[in-house]
Image (cartoon, rainbow, N blue to C red; front, side):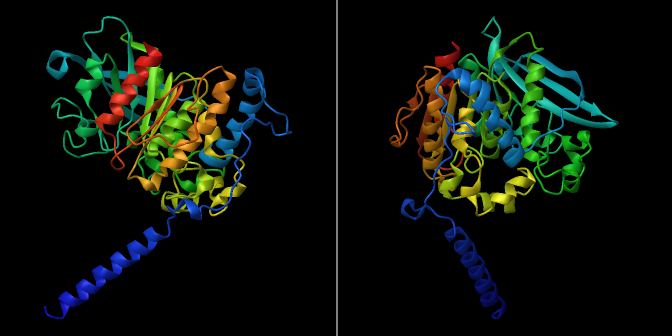
Length: 411
């Protein structure tokens, strides 16, 4: 034992040293950001200045969207998928009688392949008209969003009930007059490079990474597809105002919410919570997580073409301010956390600020500043931004501001 303990101690120290060394490779120093020039947002491919909404909608936006699809997020085939809905639960006395809880099994079928997703919904009982709904996928299974004993566990999760309840203030959402709809994101693509065959990509004949073309969508495209398919269902629910669906995502699902919001104009509001690289943060800043790191650690998220830009961010034909601009003129909220340096809060803020150029074409206010606001002090116009204290998480502070933002634009 006298010999083993020192060896284990040295081994542990070496691991910590390696971790620290790897962490040190990430840059957080503004003075060390490499020189960069952002692609011109309001300039067409042939150099024409964009000065009107018509030019934006008919020329510039149609140029940008396929670039993001082909070089960053990937495309999914437009093939028709058969969909059916089965109501498993419709309880009007949930949450001590304040809400109606619904659980809907959504089945997707194509060419003999079948995939299922389980939708969990809570709708406020005190609202007698159709209600706006926050649509926000969860990371650990439907049963983890609340201790409610009647939530059906998600198929890919055995984690305990209420495991992430702190991120899901159901009573606050219901009391404010909003519904909540959520699905375990694994239902559309289990978040692993080894689980393509279990994802919805198998519906399109892509059961493995090798089957996917260089510009083909992978996990983020699959999750975005899932967001839109849940919206398809919400359009059929008589208690839901499908014209007022607030799309929200945290972290990798924040990346997804931005892509889904850019590609599907039916979402009334889009919220990115600490989405970082490949989400709201400007790639060219190379702060915290970079294109190279994200593609190496999560090779199943973006399309294969995105790997061309590993350590070559300046060669990207687009940057993330242009993705945010694709959401215009709909309300957009981008949020960061002060201690979540990996997601580059300043890069997220600047991206949102620069996207405001397009909102101005519509006569709307963006952030109207390129100076980072004080921590915990939201800037709220048609584009909103806050940088709160704390770490990579979803907190009551975030939800309170998202609810106020929805109140401003939907009520």
